[in-house]
Image (cartoon, rainbow, N blue to C red; front, side, top):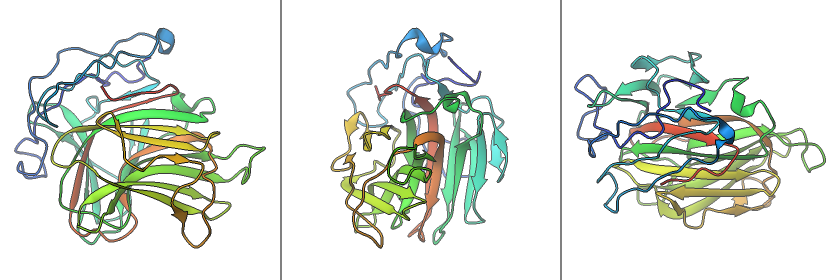
Length: 309
């Protein structure tokens, strides 16, 4: 079921920012090949998991990305929205915009082929961010979602990193009958400085009742300078967390009940919530070592597994 007419989950890799964009073309997304003319399948959700197709065998950003028709519970391509800056509190389809301060910006950017994408920028030294968060009442979260699956495409500049920043996350209330029932808990994915000034993948968890701030760090770097596909699987009851980059499980990032440790306390379980909100963008919890630009596109969310092609 396609909820928003602007959804084109099967778009190919697309061109760089046009001359009116905020970013220099040398650091922004570049043209990767001809676009697919196909549109979103209008079929209902119970029509089956969509065919993800296959990608070419070339290097990242070397050829078209065809995700096939999208029949997930939420499909977002950003094509339905006017290009330009986004303000804090603004409503955008199923989303609300959160921009934390002057050190970060969000915009609907136009690429060189005329297609659109979400772009978030963080200044050097900024401990801030900009995110899109699902609004209350979005059909995806009309029912309890103890499991949540999704994918997105992203292009990241290679410049900035920090001790911990978030690309995407999902939160909700821990159900009754479990430890810390009633607490708000979050599963998050993002980056951290791997010691060489580069971004590597980091999983994070927080819990309002226990005060947990837990993590698991991967040595695997986030790919920069080209469009990539990122997918995730969050399973609350099993306390399982999985993240995939370009269809491959990210090294040493999977969580089965426990991560690597928790701040100011012993390692504790990642008690899973019934997910009721998802957010995507870039939010840093410590000063950025340099400016960071992230482009996000073709966000797909569902109650069933969603994989990268």
